[in-house]
Image (cartoon, rainbow, N blue to C red):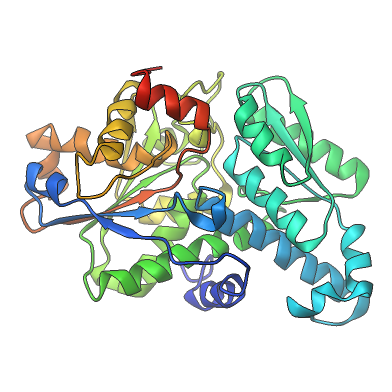
Amino acid sequence: MKKIFSIEEAKEAKKVIETWPGYGVTPLRSLDILASEISVKKVFYKDEASRFGLGSFKALGGAYAVYSSLIDHIYEKTGQRITLSQLSEEKFQNIAKDFVVACATAGNHGRSVAWGAELFGCPCYIYLHSGVGKGRADAIARYGAEIVRVDGNYDASVKQAAIDAEKNNWTIISDTSYPGYMDIPRKVVNGYTVMFDEIIEQLKGTVPTHVFLQAGVGGLASAACAYFWELWQENRPDFVIVEPEKADCLFQSARAGKMVSVDGDLETHMLGLACGEPSHLAWDVLSQAGDYFMTIEDKIIFDEIRNLANNRWGSEKIIAGESAVAGLSGLLELCNVDKLKHEISIDENSVILLFGTEGATDPEIYHKIIYENYNG
């Protein structure tokens, strides 16, 4: 596992990201009412709704990969390994202006890449498939990125971005990896690990028994598994990977015992998880570390968004987007079936860790869910 990720790399990313304007530790909420209702010791929810004002944990990954890739590019051009403070110097800014970054996204990753590109002075192109709404597109364009629309699903936008980047000598900043493209996705997930370091401090010595991780291509899930496994070794928690039933590439890979892709329109309201092809890097980790894989129906997520907003599970209102509640919804689905709950050893001594990966990243949809009882 250490060959894929390491805590040393994670701590280097944290040193950089802590210096960015607007950095702050996001809250680890305790859902005590939920813990009582499902008869476990504790349920923790890492709330990423406020991260850098972008509303998602992905603010950490895409922007860090832009920064790290730009620093590497400047080194190749000048032989100088510069710091963030030096990046404001005119000679380095001129290099940054010629360093064009691009990516495909369902929303949050592209927003992070666009924000990072604006922050560090790089031109940026973001590719959006037909399922990405205007609200998410506008949120990305706000950071100066050029929006490119692509017919088809997420995987189609990935392919088009790759074609155009090859033709124009742009740098793709992707959170999914494939043979020959591993370095930048590693940078992305190293950015994510800032969350894990924060969580360790917030847990104050408590080690979770179970971690529920929502997954698209698997970047977040694999980074969490690798980090916590390296940290806690034989005391590591069980990892439960949760996907939408119509975008279940990791679930199908686990069933097949090898990496497989799923076809179709990947239609799910959990737009950040609407991926049909796993990241190779992520599957390398999850094939070893994923203890359980499960899928959930879209219809169950809307009540959980409302429950969090209405203090149903804890003492504070929590703003959560559609993808944020996948882990929570998966936990509740399992706990509704005594046999499954027993099989994965969830009991009165269990400490559950959930990741609230996004806030209301599409305000219009969030408003419908909360105030118009929207259910898809």
